[in-house]
Length: 202
Ligand code: SF4
Picture 1 (tube, rainbow, N blue to C red):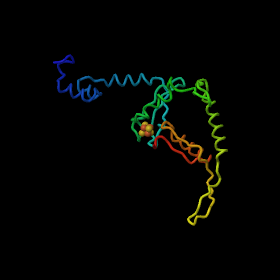
Picture 2: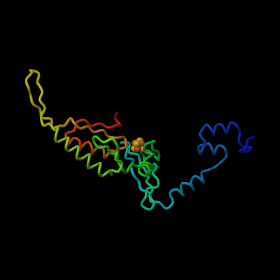
Picture 3: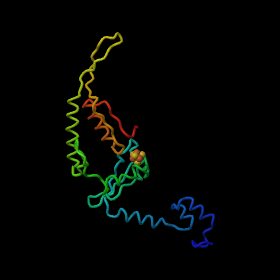
Picture 4: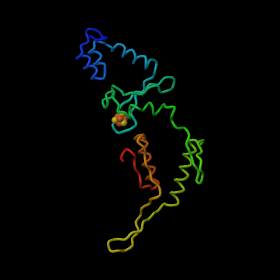
């Protein structure tokens, strides 16, 4: 007999423990936590607005529920009514809340000017965006090629229209969503960038 009571056989205990003490496992021990579980769920989302959404990360398109209280996101979880994921999310989708609400979220950039030995940690994201746009424009203007000269099979010099720059590359990150990737690829191709890649493909 164990401290859990006479009804708890060693075989039953091991079976439940092997299941990682899931609800089913605890039910096997004679402990019915369904009422407590339902109450906890109710308390977690009491008084919140539930907004159906779609995980932004990949083309599977899992349904999510975004819980909002006082105009702030307080929870994001899988939507059990979605026929695609039926309430489940992969680890990336399950971490969406931490991406949206996180005190570690970067709001300043570090910048080390050419020739400087120290980092300037006071620059804003807006400053960084303007700086990147300025450098992209300058680089593209300085390196853009309308034509490319090569030789045909007879060895004659021929000129081909290319309209590209080989001085800029674009590497997307895995947390960029589908729509962002689409717009970024459009922008890069409009600029004549041909080296376009994404970390999710590497
Ligand atoms: S939860 Fe995972 S599988 Fe589902 S859409 Fe998001 S990234 Fe894709």
